[in-house]
Amino acid sequence: MRTEEIPEIAALPLFAAMNERMREEIFHASFLQVFPPALTLIETGGRADFLHVLLDGLVELFTTNGSREVTMQLVRPVSSFILAAAYTDQRYLMSARTLSASRILMIPSPLLRTTIAKDGALAAAAMTEIALRYRNLVRSLTDIKLRQTLERLANFLFLESRRQGDAVQFQLPAEKRVIASLLGMTPENLSRACGTLAEHGVLISGPTVQIIDRTKLIALARPDPVVDDF
Amino acid sequence: MRTEEIPEIAALPLFAAMNERMREEIFHASFLQVFPPALTLIETGGRADFLHVLLDGLVELFTTNGSREVTMQLVRPVSSFILAAAYTDQRYLMSARTLSASRILMIPSPLLRTTIAKDGALAAAAMTEIALRYRNLVRSLTDIKLRQTLERLANFLFLESRRQGDAVQFQLPAEKRVIASLLGMTPENLSRACGTLAEHGVLISGPTVQIIDRTKLIALARPDPVVDDF
DNA sequence: CGAACCCTTGATGGCGATCAAACGCCGTGG
DNA sequence: CCACGGCGTTTGATCGCCATCAAGGGTTCG
Image (cartoon, rainbow over all chains, first blue to last red; front, side):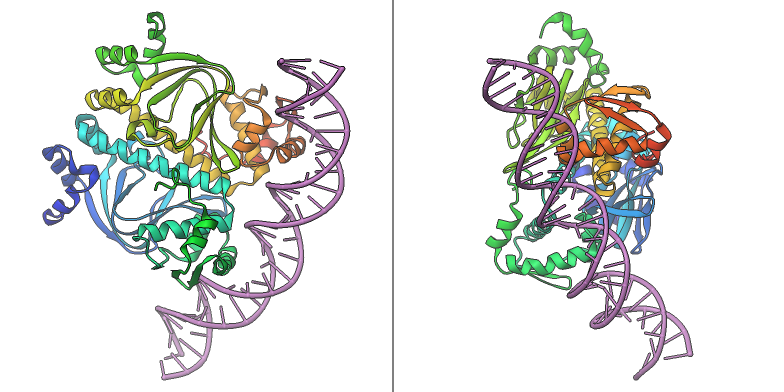
């Protein structure tokens, strides 16, 4: 890793509070690399040799079962992924690929584990990180279990808008087929659902979304103030 | 907490390696209580005042969205639950109720947090615990996203059997309506699916399951050696 | 004994998957 | 520069899984 890049990364929540010498040690043994789009970084069943931290770009976590493939999560910067597998030294439950060119920090898992054991601040940060990730997963599971597809899409768009400061107009973060899979539906149905949302205050043309009537959207999405984290 | 109960609990993975004095301190401030069946312990949106550790009995984690209610997970002894909420001091994402009479250890969250900060061994155990829980959740989400109901049921029964040492005959761990909800289906459909499984080597009568032809069951369930953790 | 409640079985309907085809965009190569 | 092919998206038609509605049987408990 090049020296001039260190300050930026040292400021990340995961590393901010930890002992400086140990941080240097970790960074020294890690790799900062830029990957092209559509590159598979990790495959289900593989050993978790590195903790990955996405600094720039976009990464998709997905799983396959024979012929079917489903995207599980979009990872956006700045965020680590597969911390659970790296910490427990188990096999990856999900595969990961870049969706756009991505800058990724790769930290050797063994070093991560030994450092967590020695540095309380890093341990705390890692624990917080994984706890938040756990909660996100609970959200996904409840979402898919008790909303139907149109409501899921509505809620997804509502949360996307909110993520961008309640933007009235914004771009979808990924291709529609990826979003469809993320929401547990087929591309065909997503397309239809996008059309239907016109009746609920949202115009979607290509990758750009325009919220015409936020009230109507919310009425459909019924975002949960607890689960959806207001 | 009564003194004679302490050794049993001190041996739990979560507490086994930690400093003895701190462990005593935690136990001294905690409550060990027996709850009757069907009692709501925790409600979604509430503050996580206690970490719960189920020692005996059976607990259901579930969420509600207006009128609908879905069970998210069965908690079996010995296992902690809602560790993520307790550690990050956030609101519960799920509700919890006892399904049978349950003995539960309740540890005040603030004390848990401060002790984790001081005791590396406890921190490590907590981290492992939540990482494993995270991975279970990933399993649930993949399961629901890429299997259909009959396959999910088949896989559920297969894993139940395996949990009991590849038992040929065993009892369902909960009422069928709960299991139906856990598997993301209606009680009616679960009932029908149970009947259909006769064609796939499984006989189900009431709460007892008999595996006639394990090969056929596996062919239907297609358990994933990675995800389903062989 | 009656009243819940759970489970089962049947009939029907709807949501969303699948199949199929056409359109637009974009890169490559003639 | 244009032709072509690939891929993502859209739209339409059809199918099937599963939810819903409805009713009856069994069990538990007051």
